Amino acid sequence: MKVSTCPVCQNSFEGRKNKKYCSTFCKTSHNNEVFQKKNEALKEIIGEVKKNRLVLKKIFEIFQSTPIPIDLLRATNINMKYFTSVSKEGYYMFGEYQFRPSNDNKYYSILKK
Image 1 (cartoon, rainbow, N blue to C red):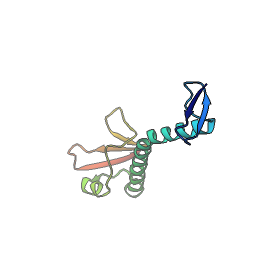
Image 2: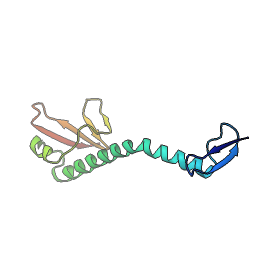
Image 3: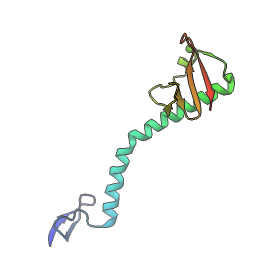
């Protein structure tokens, strides 16, 4: 048996030579911490998508599918890097809201699918 030090609680323990943690609690704590760090970026992206969807929902409630000037949309600070999908026609989707530009790119329409 090998004497090792647990990387989580720093306690010494005896066990197999490849055993890293003194208990299931320490092993689970370590794995939860690693998982949480990996998912921080994903949580930020999901937050941005939700924020964009909420902004488009509020605009849709006011304007329905009436074309909206691009200046108004720029003022809302929608982050176009974060969306849920792209439709077959190439329009950005934010949840159930579709963001489609006019032919001259001066106006945009928001449609609910």
